[in-house]
Image (cartoon, rainbow, N blue to C red; front, side):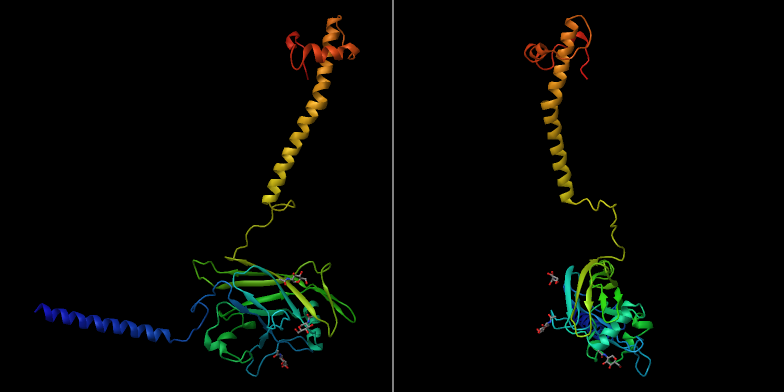
Length: 318
Ligand SMILES: *[C@@H]1O[C@H](CO)[C@@H](O)[C@H](O)[C@H]1NC(C)=O
Ligand SMILES: *[C@@H]1O[C@H](CO)[C@@H](O)[C@H](O)[C@H]1NC(C)=O
Ligand SMILES: *[C@@H]1O[C@H](CO)[C@@H](O)[C@H](O)[C@H]1NC(C)=O
């Protein structure tokens, strides 16, 4: 009897686990629709940067027959031989030298610097699912191209590079020192996911590169990562942050000034006061009147009275 119940129980268990694994298998085969599904980046995982292709004539973005925007990989960096890549969570100084500024690219740079068109790039918010990667980069994929600039696709995070500089007749100056900020979603919410990104030229009037057609252009990115969408407070007055070295410096200078004060007091001020005190004593002794320290007063002051004695007569040492 109990044996029958036991085997019945086993059968139920087997059916149940089969059903569970079947459900898992089915859900695992559903296509990934957005970045909310799928795995996040691991620390240091490369993140490709792609940008809108634009016409050289007007700087307008290029769309295909079905009206979809065309993203192309960021120009190849000489350092790596690959288009620009970021690395998840890695704060670094990243150099990307564009070996040869072609005629079309030069004109695009003019558009960017003249603010006729932004250098609109994007990065995948999470590692792209194989279904997207398998396609040619330029091929239009509905899931990646929703909304203006493809920015409403949850697969990508927009990264607009605000290049600044100045245009001249034959050449241009590009602010090639850039800050690149990336915000990741809080780890508790969605680990390994990018939420926002931006880049901008810094100090473009003093640090820039002169570029003509055929030159190379070296871009220096200072990449910073933030573990949430709020920026940490940065401003603490023009003194800058209270760094450890600043604190140490304060301590040292406090110590040094204390030493100087002590030396001054003992070497200059104390003898002067003693001298005055001795002079006063002499004056009192000779019938009142504040006198200049007399010649023998010095001798008395030091030898006769020593340090800090003889205040019993009510004279104030100030
Ligand atoms: C950008 O578009 C132009 C014009 O359609 C095309 O010739 C060029 O190959 C595209 N750029 C890239 C990198 O695909
Ligand atoms: C980037 O280039 C600058 C200037 O050319 C150089 O000083 C710096 O060391 C380079 N940094 C890296 C990480 O290659
Ligand atoms: C880029 O790399 C190529 C081949 O490695 C080299 O010949 C060229 O001088 C490099 N250009 C710059 C600007 O460093």
